[in-house]
Length: 461
Image (cartoon, rainbow, N blue to C red; front, side):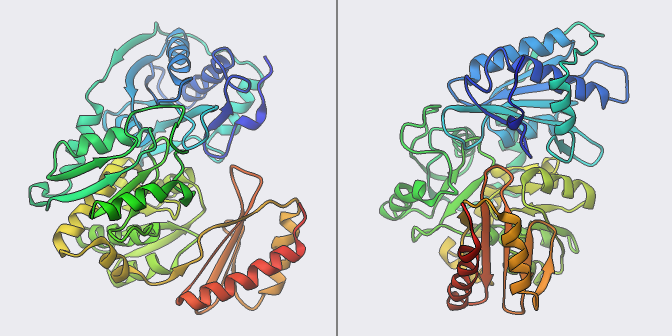
């Protein structure tokens, strides 16, 4: 069977339905994933695999075929049903399943679907990506390897995952002391609606819902909060309702942007700083991780609160891997993924919301006031360039800014005493991405123009 090798991405499998992935093509993919899990299982015993899905129109049929394939392979399948990706991670970690498979294509447009998959490790969840086994699975698919069946497949359901996740998240704080807040949420008819709705059943306050009906056609807008054009209606509604803040998760719910009470998008690094301060008060000297794109704000807040930090590559699988390796208590990514040791080093946006509610309650401040209290730098926002000569551009930037401090952890990052930038190729698209920060708005804009002009002079489409 001909399966497009390009669907095996750095972090997951993502493809167009029904051409690149369908009910037939997913069978060898799931067999390969099962074989990979079996090969990496040190004991010769039946594997317990959690299976979940999102709300995409193709997900029910792909889910059904995946379930049958796993049963045919001899797995003990735990059907966890329709849930967000962070809730799926919670299930695999909390109930101690050997591994898990989630049918989802994250924030991609409606014609996409795919697979995210993890296994339990000694130090936390292991997301299977480029550095943790994706190439092995791709090879197994190409060779059409059939797993040896050693057990009869069995099927169980777990219908309490979402409620359990909310209970555990609220158990991290004294939620009886939470003040009542008015919150507007727009999950774009996608999976973030599930955990937000369940949370607000158990806390004081008012939830104003926008686009909560699950609909894989995304009738209102794409479930991608990184494109701030998708946030305009939410920003307007927060102001109109005089709400305390707004919430914008992505398609599978593992990214979450906040809108403050004035209608502005809150930089994810500031949410990272807020949570780092809370967690360091409970874990003195703890380690916090954040990615290389923006480091000024989180590094200063961590230092001010007597913590340590480590800078990571960009990408949720890489950050979970780094959390497993370092024993850090929390990680924040500037694309609004937030990772917790308490969730197997994977994302938990429920926990993020709960901690922000706690900080607002404890301080009595508005979210806009907290943003300014935690701001240590000004960020450009990501700029993308469609180029065919990325390596030439990176080399030219290294030469142009050779008097700065160079890091090649992920692309290139060049740091000066008052400003810095990172340029890297995308892991998911044919793009060059630029992020820049400094300690003043004026410097950020001026330096952005300088670096952008260098890129444009060299760029070839």
